[in-house]
Image (cartoon, rainbow, N blue to C red; front, top):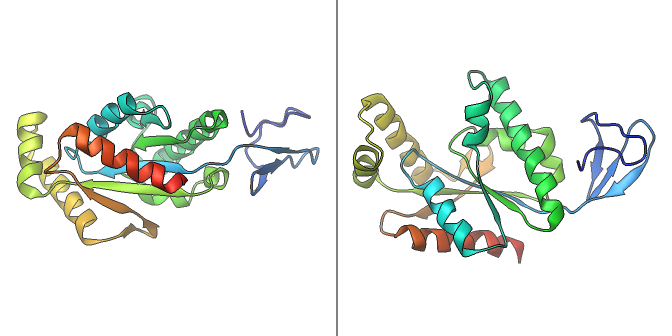
Length: 202
């Protein structure tokens, strides 16, 4: 709702956003909105993104924890245009939710590079990404025992993705922090993720 003009009702997406104010291109009306950071927790399959955010959700009411697979399951996911549409929808949800004064923190595995290209980026004070890393032995165990995955291609792609996060600090210009979780319980990982996010707000 943030992007809908309260003066003329224009709901077209192409508003001008400067700092924490939106201007309608049709009637020139300007209105303020709450501008907060957007948080993304990423990592390979089996790294514990969803499980960690589920635990974090039980620990704090300062962050709204969400799972981006809701878009993957409900929308097409075959082309880069599909994933960009999912990214825009994720941001639309987030900018409306943050009007209650709480930022969102999403579990999202891939397409991190799209975060900097989306129209919705302008509605956030910043975008912070945290990659959960596990390591080859532990990741193999989690995928096989925890999720019952036997597809060797899927396992190898996850290992490669985890290794990428360990060896780099950005994906196509989108920077990220890392958190090694292989030696942590779910609750410990959740607390660390919460500390990371809340430290960006202070």
